[in-house]
Structures are given as C-alpha cells and as structure tokens.
Image (cartoon, rainbow, N blue to C red; front, side):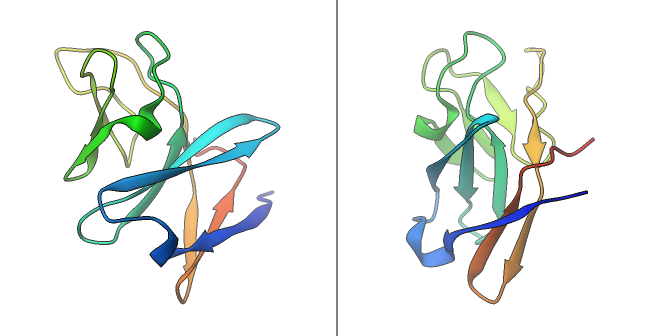
Length: 106
C-alpha cells in the first residue's frame, strides 16, 4: 500500500533542478526536467554514493556530481557503460501539487 505525502508545488523546483525530501527511508531527490516531468529517486549514486540531487539534469537523466555517471530518472538505471541502479519512487500530480509515495517502484 502506498503512503502519499505532499512535498510542494511544481514551481518550487526549478526546471532542470532538484530538491531533497528527507524521509525515514533516506533522502529522496525530486527532479524537474525542462519539459516539467517530475521524477523521484534515491539521492545516492550507485557508484560512490554521490548526492544525485546536486547533479546536472539533461533530458531524462541526471549526471552524478562526483564521477559523472548518468542515471535514468524514470528507471534509476545507470547508463552504459556504467552499471548499477537506484530506487525510484512514484510521483503523482494533483494540479500543481507534487505527491510522493514512499513505497519504491518495483
């Protein structure tokens, strides 16, 4: 069962930016793309645990600020040749309000 929490509005996250939601499951990074798509992933690169929320967003990917690994925002999977993945979390929009589920995607 999902437990949805309100985390703010779309306008509170800059395009190509992120914010961090601190939860008892760890930090979750919320990203907004140039097309206003919103994604939620664990704020930890699978390589050296860099803070993905501080990375640069390009399309539907974020580049880790430590070693430039690219992570797909929709799946959490590292882009080849790198390997690994991070947990992703469901997001839903209620008009401009962002809702986050703390139950990771499967």
